[in-house]
Length: 126
Figure (cartoon, rainbow, N blue to C red):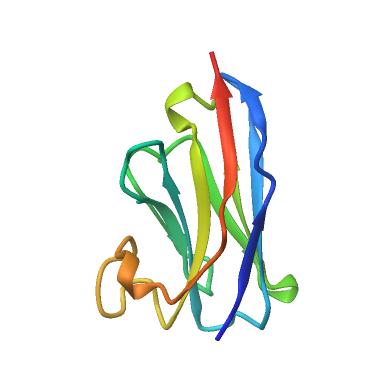
């Protein structure tokens, strides 16, 4: 089973940018790679996901500010976050699922992801 590890979380001011990275332990061809977040007292929610061919899916809250990309040669995928807001403060998780992002359910369906990282904290101050 693939293991994934996130990095790049930090404390930033509103309006700033961050890029999170997630490295997988194996080649992730044929894997869908997702990003999720969980704010204090909130449920974990999907930010977006990326297919192995580069197609992406985003939550409405992420469109226009967040961009997901991947480098299959490095078994790494990224979450570029711009124009950060205090409400973006959360623990951010990457996750992997075999097959396509839409196979067996929606890309944001948490149970479909069978590998999760430990999370990286993003704090945005006003």
